Length: 117
Length: 111
Image 1: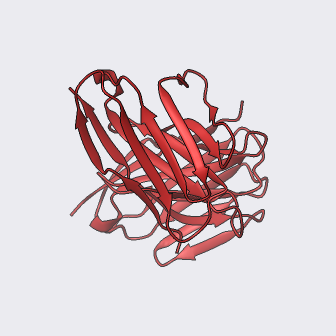
Image 2: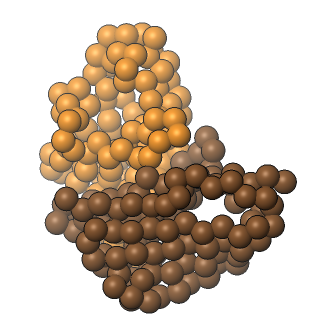
């Protein structure tokens, strides 16, 4: 149980284009989803917290107009990187929190490796 | 704000040696989670500790939660090459509805 999928697993795009990343909880309803960014050999950097049906809460320094987050259902959250630039190249990982049992436990998706040319 | 610190940042051991990573929080935690991220992979949930002084074991892995619920440790006995990866601890930042992750300890094992 507690499987989270992420799509696509990798994407290469041209500078100036937008990229949408999907995060799905496959066998549970996720009350909260999180989006992280991770640079090589570095820790997880939380970008935003997303609750179903409400606006995402962004961490300080994360541009909400550049990283659009939509959490339309209890099983799906999307992150859209708008007008991507090479400095946006990174490993983006989502996680989902079930909210019952171990309410603080996060289940991570496999990540999306974004390369902006 | 809440800070979660992990030491060491890196640990290189010979296969068969033991390994320990320590996690310290600036605030008292209601619980703590441990995750493992293999090279090129994503974090995978290992365990959650809730009670003061709690000790849990998973085969060669032993997890402890401090009496004051501000620190935790992960100990691996007789490391194997399959243990390589980065181990993260995380504690809930309940006021913000999120968790604070430590920077992780990266373990490499020489066969």
